[in-house]
Figure 1 (cartoon, rainbow, N blue to C red):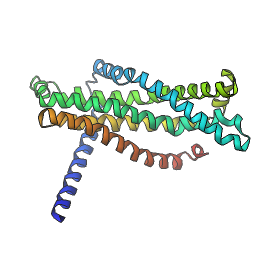
Figure 2 (figure 1 turned 90 degrees about the vertical axis):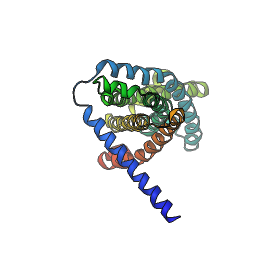
Figure 3 (figure 1 turned 30 degrees about the vertical axis):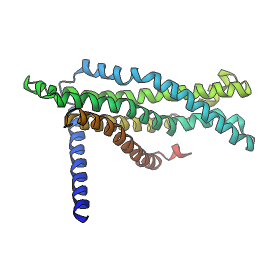
Figure 4 (figure 1 turned 180 degrees about the vertical axis):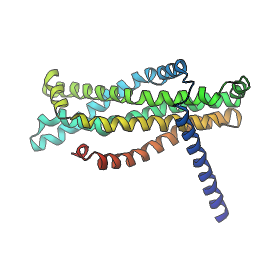
Length: 261
């Protein structure tokens, strides 16, 4: 039993070491030529634009639910007028970035893992290398860059959709005007409330892109290995994202004390 535990611990450490080296290499290659702009734009379209409908629908639902729960709480204290501000603050600082990261991890992480895994087991990656094409740069770095670019944009879309969903829920209950609702929502936020969550989503994009690409790029075992890489991409990306979010929130409160107010 002890031997198995030690072996499992060694395998886990080796796996994390490989992922760390893989991510470090991807970050270095982000700033080195060639930059593969065409492929990056293609991946931004696949990751960002094709994820937009899911983000919008989720944002509307999350905003409506948060608005209803917020109203039921603030009514007890006679602070119904604070609903737009409370909802905007919750979405911008925490709910929007985290839910966006998890949704993208589920949709995009599985896709990257399956796509690169399929290319690996069918030897397409080896074929690229034999043609003097840097497969790591072309396949991995472009997807990591696309995730880094797309996550902040999708988070903004999630926040706006959430506020719109909150407004629709509030308009049904109290008949609040569109102008009053959004003016109240944004008046309660300072510019410093936007910067830390945006930086956080860049890290989320790096985590999703590098973890999914690592699992797919190193997949083995044929079709079964591709399925395993796809599943693990979603699970591990989500776990790493949640754990990293806890650490980043603590760092944000330390570096930007005003965001905790």
